[in-house]
Amino acid sequence: MPDVREKQREARRKIIRQWAKLPKDKRQSMQGISEFARTAAQQNENAFVRSRRDPYQKIMGWLLPRSHL
Image: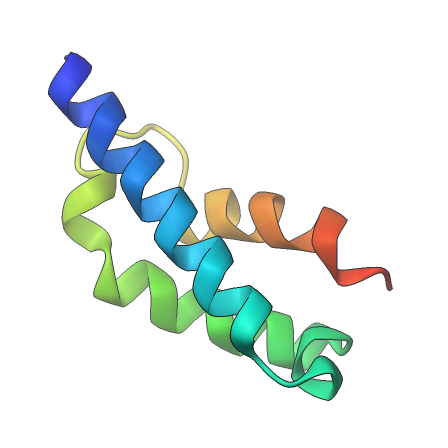
């Protein structure tokens, strides 16, 4: 179980770093956020194997507070 949590933490850090590197205009539209979250969920699906929540929804939860919409 700790290994699964660690994978999720690492994925979260990686995804948020990638998010911060995007141009500001892509981080401020709901469409840009959604596209990024879908891609990130697919690329990191092994980190969310035991998660009850949909990986896309989980990533959206991480990104929306940082988007300043």
